[in-house]
Length: 466
Image (tube, rainbow, N blue to C red; front, side, top):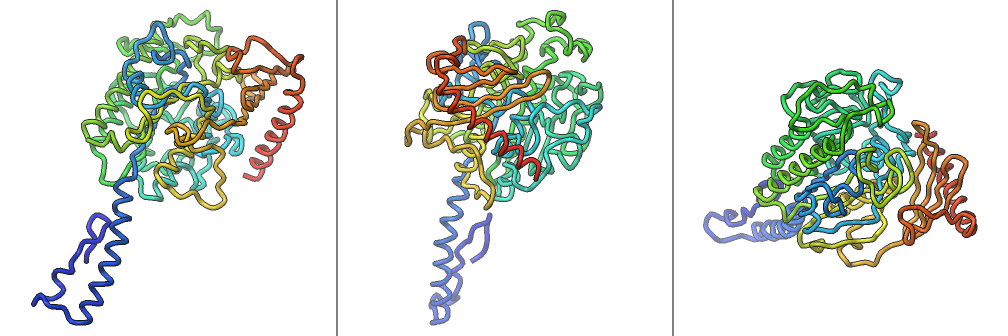
């Protein structure tokens, strides 16, 4: 018996050169057969563990995709993904901005527990040394420790220092940028400094950032090892600066983003061109899975990090990124896993980014360490039709860029605390949040406000001991 590819191979045929076994050899053969039976099950299980490709766009509006009702975009690849899997219509980002949602995803918990409640600023700001501390319990680290190859290609935005880098959090391979946004052609950050890395090494590359992310993702799939992999594809598009893929012009002054939007000359057409290039990239990634013959054993997840920006289409919801109105946190989400999820399914299950963490750990059969309490739920039972829709109570909070808001959704009801106002909405009847029912349904506010307050105290207390 010898090990081959992590499994045991039968050598029993060679135990006796004469073809006859003595008693000792019979005992050895019996032991070997038992071991082989046990390990064959383990090897089969390892071979069956699915790959996971997680694709996240940046600042995409809920209504920007064809399958979500966009009238002026062409997104055939993401639409096709939805036709082959399940599309969620009640899905939320963990936060209304980049860093918070990414922290929620990688930890599987509310990001307030690790102190990432607002987007990290440029490296020239006080956030230069800020970031998510590595604790050995992030999603990529857990997957890596359990035998998965792990890679992040694209945006990080959870810290600039080496100890806060993707590699420090369990990614075997990283290619992308560390800051919140990047010049698509020059690959510089908001300070105008180079911001393109391969692992922890600063590198240079020619090309449009969206295409570079796609190219590296496709290459990673083609060069995959024998073990299963987790590939996190973090597109920069369609985040500002609005630089079309066919116009490598000089980037606008970064400061313009801080001026009133009516002073920016960007157009919806610029935004749509960027989105459509990302859609084409998704198509290339899906094609790479097909060509490698592994699409059937790969869970593909598509979502976005927060509500869309000012050129996005967030219809039918109100407001945008950095707000806890629905337009700031309701996002697209699509899951495809052939043979496990129905093709063309649509689910009204309420979900949140950190549910995807729990789902990935569940489908990959990755052990969750004792003491790590995931706050998301495994969506597979509901999305596969094995379990009924589950009522949820979810929380959000932001205090940044002039926005001070808190929100809780429980079932169909939402309490939004916006500055000094407390508003109540029935999201089933009024998803656009046009009719405040705070006066008519004071009972809802009385029930939800203590939940929101207790949650805030709980996450803050944990962060203080973090």
